[in-house]
Image: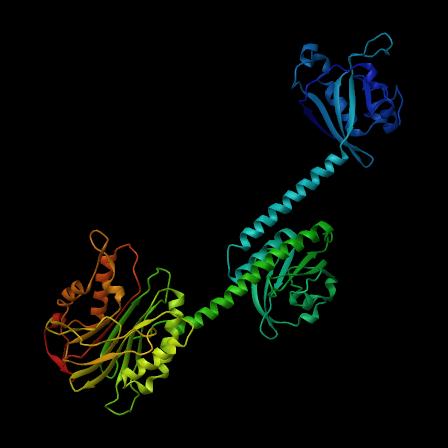
Length: 572
């Protein structure tokens, strides 16, 4: 018996209310004897006036009546009864398979001439059938719990695009809310499948197992992903050992549910319940399918993302600038900075093609620096195409004009409307000197930084590549003395906007002036210095892609002492 207090405001209870009516009502005196009752109460309880409430009514109603006799309702005045919010006793219980609420109010007709005498004012109990209301409350509570569970599942599953993390969240939530234990089997390579398991202790175990889905009825079909497969009930005794874990004990129920993905098989979910726990109800099976749909969508998205990331990484390796290294005992350094903070490739590029080992001493290494119109991924795709084309044209590298003409024809025959500017630098070591052949195709002319600080501009020029049917080009030959450097750079350096007011270009003149203080600087330090100058000039503003390559003739002597003093080693 449950007894609570209602606050719905009292009204006077007249004796005619105990006549015919839809709600059972009975008047009981303080000693517990039924004095009067209406037809609905007589039909419900099967009692007549004069019967004891303890014998005629359910125990919860009798207990409620005895509880209120300790604080008689006669203490409540008529003025109080007319006021809203006066407390009334309310009891809750069942009669047969129905749920009722009993509301007690003062029996004001007690003591009237036609009323049997009693020890004092009694109570009239009105009974209201609340079975449907209680059922709706339970259904609403269940629905709220299911909604909260699915919301939590969606939030956790969508928080990651890592497949193993999605599998971990799936089995953990399934074991926590839907069953005692859960497994997720994802598609694998060959017979090896990723399997995640979560038991009653909440710990998740990830394994790569060699399993045959055909061993479990319905598992192979569920893992196909399409067409959608209904949940499959199985006999736990027939489950293979990789499903039946030692921490589960006797199993009472096992069900296999597909994890539907977006066109990609996501796997299957196996739910396990131990003995002593009832099997899955229709509502639980429905919520399991809704949960599986969310988990499958998250897992398939994670799988697609992983595959795309792998493809992107493979392609990106081909687009990334190569590592710098010496070219035939010629010192070289390079640095590339994309325009976007989160980007790795763009429209600027450089490439290094060393001469084959053991080849003719007159054979030259080739250094290429280029700038594709635009930036971002589209420019990077064209960059990759240009680099591959130049790699195929390496046997013709001694003829810069021919290489540029063939590359121009390739770009004109492609669907791309972008163009590219290039500098080709053929490099050969001649004793203690380095001989360069430089050809610019619409690109900024290279700068020669002498060891003494003089800055010269290479006398080369030519047409853009990918615009005109016929191109022109001029090749310059430059001899680098030990310590001299040839600097190749893209316009992202000189056209960087910034400065004190943020609207001034860095410019060729300012670059040459700064390079005059960098004579004899090692190539690694020189490219770092140039990038630092451009970055400081830009500040936090936007900038284009930046690429710099420094080709340096090695010094005859490398000073080994700190500060550049002391004996040296002859290297030429």
